[in-house]
Length: 528
Figure 1: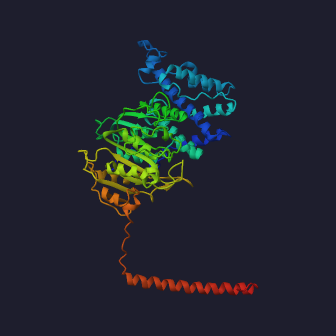
Figure 2 (figure 1 turned 135 degrees about the vertical axis):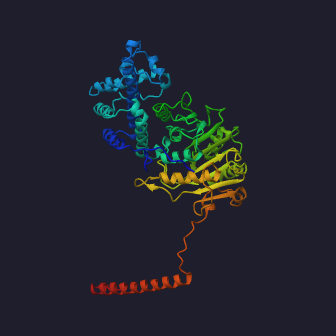
Figure 3 (figure 1 turned 90 degrees about the vertical axis):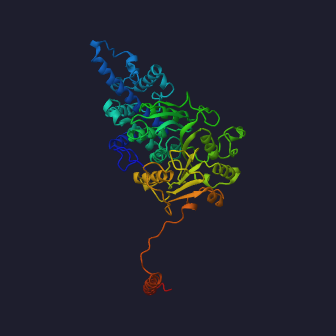
């Protein structure tokens, strides 16, 4: 069965604590005419700086109290030993806040970012250093510093509540919404990430995301471990036993991911710099236990013509004009012998037969790699209103820890699920995520799960032969059928007589209304 989530989420997948929305509205008001894509780095960089400064100040106070015992509050090694970033004097939040109203505040922040990167090699190249540019209103920048300064983020109490992480995540989502299509490049809606994580259950091992965006898959994986810290196969540890590997080609998004993970103390190998997973795979030899991803939909300019004979294309060379099956095969290539993968793709990947895609899909199906397909509702994503689907792959369908599923694939149709959270965006509820995940766990035969049963209109376990009979199309709607309609107990003949009688009465009433309208029009001199 799908396990219950940690407390504090309620029914809201936006991680709202109450103050995030207020903080966002205030910060957005200060944006003035600045483009959301630019303002994102201004705000998130300052939030990160506030976090590491809070953590530093707490440790600094503790060391100052122990000076009689030989502690030195100005020794960087004292902080590094406790996994706390060292913040030099010129970069401390107290200094910036004291100078927030000065016209030089932009340069002071840039200098602070440079100093922090200099003294903390793991942050090299990560922090934004564009606060002194003329286009950035320094008065509003000072007001933003005052605003962010009202929230404690990095001390032990607030770290335990993941205050900054939730603020950061909420702001990422709001910026993604504000940027529209571009926002989808760095942000996967939290409900989609949660669904993937809940289904494949990354308790321990190597986790990989070849197009990691702002790192949401990794954050949710760690949360999953913490929510299931007892009986999780991880020795009851609340902290994850995951080794995290990722890659991101967009430099600004790569920096967002580095900060997003750093503020949660998540150690991850995202490579020394941004890089394209197709043309410069930074984890060539990695075989991951779990792969999770939300690749760009239908990417046409991926440079496929330069990779026609790549070792990763075991099931056929992907078309140069669409990277969907390049991503699928890249993911398969990096799966460990017992590895599982969950990733988002455009709906076309389930049925397209153009440019050899149908043949590649057939070979993947016949290799018995497709474990589950989930059709998602429309309007979940910021990048597109086109509905998408989830692919779940398994290298080993006869893993002794689970039921032998060889020659079988589960289809789930979740298109009718989700609730509108605004005019254009939909979100899966906690209950819906739990239902989908529980169905998959039951079908896999997990210990403690309910017995699996096909549910017309929702889920169906199909054989490879059945899939072949549908031309190797993986669209769940082809398999799950129509939802069963409850019999109301009224005999058909009686029901038809009743309905026809009702219809006759309505038609008679319609004729009366029509005659009345004709009379009124005639009285006005407009007879028909």
